[in-house]
Image (cartoon, rainbow, N blue to C red; front, side, top):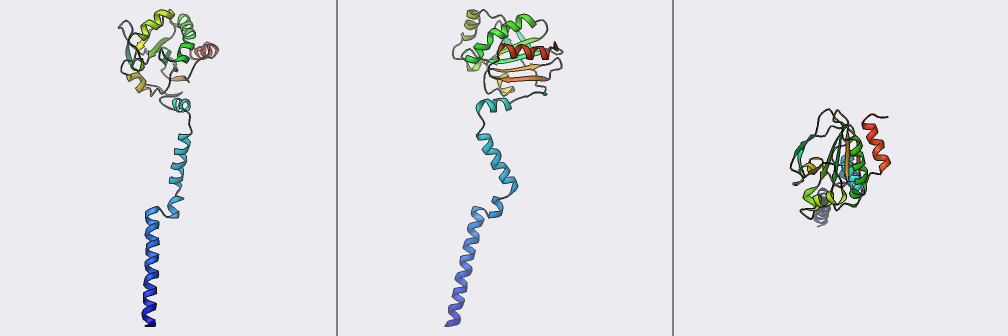
Length: 202
């Protein structure tokens, strides 16, 4: 009888150990929790969650030193325009409802009047995000701006450049390499400083 009780006790102990081991298999053993790759991935996820929209917009798409792809769009008057080669380019993604976009427009108009013969201005309206059909022509007429507006009616250019916020501005040198990327409103002094840099005037 005593021997039988010992055997039963041993079986119960073994069963308990097996149950604990299976629980660890299901929930992850302590060693898997401290796996360097798992820890690094979790840290990256947490860091990404703490980024602001502007920080994500800066990281998205193309950045300084890269050569973004060319694209072509129709202007307000129906003329097809594509990125010119061998010439500095200003690419600005904007919308009429965007306050910071509207604030920087007078400076861009001034820059266009001064440098339009030296560099290409591609003012890309995010047309697919506009609320009214005539918003862009009405806005341009009311403000008296003369720079060419490219109508991104399907959002293809914005998608290509992974634009997350307006305004987003790229300044490319004559070799098509991004020298400056600005997410957010440009102030006049910084805009002309960056343009002079790209145009190698300083």
